Image (cartoon, rainbow, N blue to C red; front, top):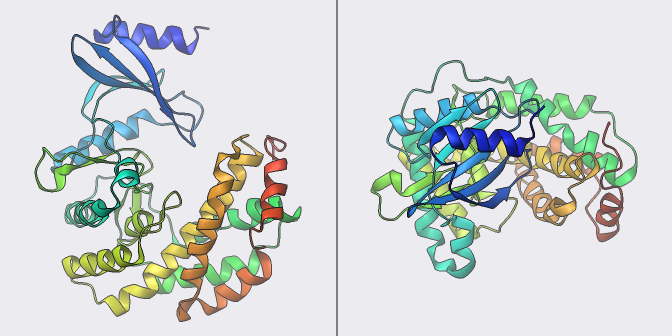
Length: 338
């Protein structure tokens, strides 16, 4: 069997980029990796998404072309090999929102306004056909990672999920089970690029959208404003919620419990995913992010509509104290088959 290096070289040769210089660019929580290629004064990105690891280049291409078709800036597809899991993509540059905001916090309002406008624009167009469309029960089950992975990692026990699932499913049905729209799932500052030379919504470059599915209009807004990797200012969060509601014609008072419910679901799921990435995937780098996600969860649970969920989370989920985080880190890579 050929190695990934040999397969990628053959792919690039066929695409006319075999003689390009190649530099590792990034990896992420998945098994995907990216290399930046240079030749003759031009650049491109090689995506390596190994088959059999849950990666899906076909879906990436499909969503990318949909985003482009509605006037948004996803990477152009130069070449594709779905059998072996390689794509050659347009290089949209390095101006990630997260990177820009490290050096110029004053840009936060401008960048987040543009990203919010992209969501409104995207949701104003019909979604592609045949996207996954999870039920309220499915979304609640996904949040159960907080019990089966985070609580287990922190305490050694995985609590019974029955009551938790019932309460969260009920909340999702009441507040977050309206007609669906496309959601990109990982819509946050490390997956958004600033392209100021482009116009309107195209100024926001979009990455990591292959998990797109049908969901609630507020989900990607929560993903943007309750970022696991950086603190969004309260003023920006408040302003962007208002901007979104105004553009969508939504009553802010009716949107508030939906936003809190989606925020709680997402925070619970992320707590579990970060613990799982450590215990099963051997990736401890996500553990320092847990306190921020915990804080976001507590803010969402403070909404009166989530009182029952707040009580059961208080009973079942331990606070991520330094000693709990040390325990989780010590278990890194020790449960690869769990």
